[in-house]
Image (cartoon, rainbow, N blue to C red; front, side, top):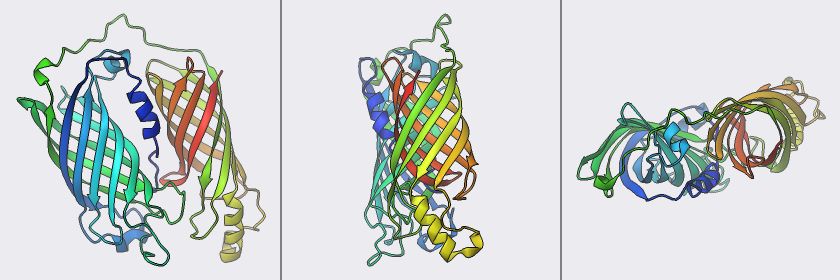
Amino acid sequence: MRSIFPFLFSLFSVGFLFSQEEEKNHFSIEANYFYGNIFEHNKDIGHLIVGHPEGVMLSYNNKTYGLTEAERRYGYPDWGFTFVYQDMKNPILGDNYSAYGHYTWYFVKRRLALTVGTGVAYNTNPYDIDTNFKNNAYGTAILSTSLFKLGYTYENLWKGFGVNAGLFFLHYSNGNLKAPNTSTNTFGINAGITYQFNADEFPDYIPLEEDEPNISEPIKYNIVFRSGINQSDVIGHNREPFYVLSGYADKRLNFKSSLQGGIDIFFSKFIKEFVLYRSIAFPDDGLDGDEDYKRVGVFIGHELRFNRTAFEAQLGYYVYWPSKFENRVYNRLGLKRYFYDSRIFGTVAVKGHWAKAEAIEFGVGLRL
């Protein structure tokens, strides 16, 4: 699976983390050992799976107790940072060092914890046509990465110390910034210990008041410009800029959720070279080589709000698709950060076709 989880979301996460209302800092630290398997999501990486990756996760968790409405409505989540070292158990793949901004949500009387993190990673042995041509998973040393953990946790079991154990998932990819980009997905088990500082001084949770309003808004209209650089899957092709112009309407239903619907216009220059290449190398594709590289899609989406930060998920369909690149259904996963009474926003997202990334998009938008 190629970077279908959004890359560089940590850029916005960090901004959000430091925009919280001022509060007394209550935090914990956590150390986990993990052991797992690389999932063969693509037969092209079969030769790279020769062992069971293992490593360590070190985390800082800021504890919340309800100073903001968002904390109360989302069940007092943690936010923080995680560092991961992963030994891929294959010298061709090298090792990965990664840093994440993360959130942890609690369920079942705070005994079940879900952690979602996103950030950047450094790979010690990426693809090189002369010295490491077998590493078709990582085309660059700098990668996007996503972390998911789900498991049992028991905090402050004894004098601030606690334990946790569960399942994890780690994804590494460069978002099609440079070929090759087959990527890797590691899943397995983790176990560790936590220590909460000054646990005996942790305040009572501030409850959500019944009369706190559940925000809703009339329909708003949005204009977004996105851009970036990407490349086709063919090694050696040029990296080209792309541009996306979008317009959509959104309806905020409540404090957490908004629905969206709109149109995208894609100007993806790399498709020019890719279509010409396919028309010559694979004539059975039925391409002439001079097809229009522009595409037009319509989409629906959902936005999950947390104060001025939002997670965005969209599903689209190309109504104008002359180049027949990938398939007609596309998706976008990203993070938004609102400014100036939510009238202006910045966004970063991964746009792809199901589990195959096409590009990392950076954008700015206006909400009317």
